[in-house]
Image 1 (cartoon, helix red, strand yellow):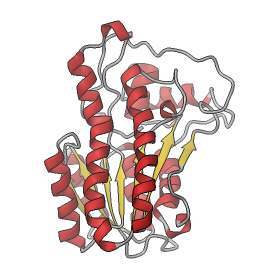
Image 2 (cartoon, rainbow, N blue to C red):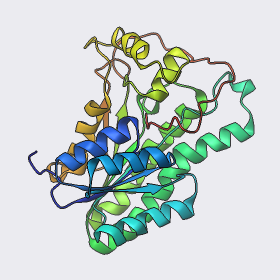
Image 3 (tube, one colour):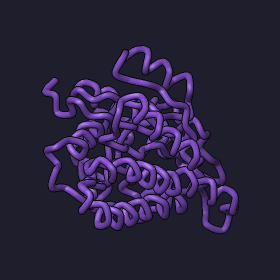
Length: 277
């Protein structure tokens, strides 16, 4: 541990599994106090108990603005301030050909992937503007910077996360608040396993398939993404604002691959598979 986040307080949504869990562990290693905010109450509680006193769980449905507001207030009441807001929770959501996507599925996916980020930014900014400092980090995806890498609704939402984040960066910068985007790709999680194998639990198969299709010949891990998030959260990134940090081994954002439409029929990932990719 080098103390890169020593004394800082962070909220990580979707913090009980996948990239969120990896980020909680990495942040605590670097001296942060963390709120593990997740709809998976049991997993969040278990992680907090395992790590100890610097972590507190909070049961959160990110699609509910009142709950997001309460989470931010909880962090301030628990630890006295809020330095880092990592809006990371996500689902794959509605999939399939555009003509088959139902309105309710579209709206629910937008609620979880986009509206939740708006709520997180809004209520973090409410606290951070009074402090005069803060770092807001939003999880997009390589599907947010290049089309053909994910389902239609997911792709639309992640592009919107990028646009919202960069717009907010221009408003909040003068208040000492940075707003940046992490765009993972080729990272093994329940969500990506579902996308490439049809089974959110088949992480080994997903890792092999993903690793075979990028220049580094391996799949990314939650720890790989957590290290990038750590940079954006730390004072080392004090001049980094409105950036989109793509972390994908050049496997999706740059490599010359045929664009493809991801067709998984009419299936929808379960709500519990919110791993923030």
